[in-house]
Length: 380
Image (cartoon, rainbow, N blue to C red; front, side, top):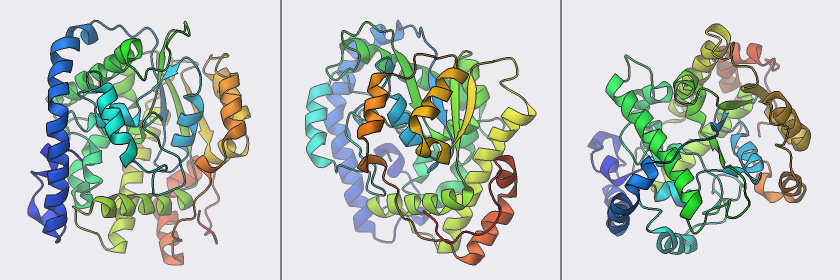
């Protein structure tokens, strides 16, 4: 949530606890004021250099619904010495992290917990994170604006697909321009930033980007990066839906600025978000065949496949995407040592009635990825 967005949200979307809302707004405003001098310095000192950055390697996009294993896959692939990525540091400080690099990093580090809070996944300032967090700071056209205000879902879900006529052409062009600049800035930071990853290793950098909304934006991204690689990961909807509900409830309660929803509405929101995202993906891939003339640019993997044998899955991705050097010692070491970072978390179980609704509403997904369309006893 950004300060400029939060201060304009209509009252009926806010929490009844107005004190919590204004306290959060004051914190965001103070942080914005502290960032402002560094933002000016970035614009004055680095703008031209960023504009001159060329993208030698098209990015790899990790896509799939939230709670489907995208973070785990992102964390694994990011260990490759050629890969660079957005971090919590660069996304929270998107418009000022070059000039304010060390100051902002040292200021934020003591304030962060060691995990994401809603699960057991470790999250440090320099760990990979989805770029949508940074894009939200560029303008009002991000679905992530609804994280704190879930009642805005119907108004903002159009930004999941970024398609006309729901989204104005001017907004789409702005989004593309902001996205391109974000990529350029990350590549530029890799050349001069204090916390850059590829210092002195001689490798040409390649971005690995993970953002669930990109699942519904493949044609848009291919228009920008025609040779980009896509790794799509899927998971049984009977696991995804309750896990997504737990995530959204946690994120709303953490900031406590937007109104809570009744349990049935949380389920309806999770189902609608899943439908928008995955039906658009299936339409692009199966009906419009966006990868028909793009061999070695797209692969689908399953959550269970990744967790049961991560190294074999990475080998498979490298082979299918013509990236034979993807497997490396750094990835092997990370997988061997990784334990608590991706320990599975138990989430609230769906009732029998709720499972029935999921099975009915998302029947297409059970069929598409061949999941058993029967209720489960344990939802993790």
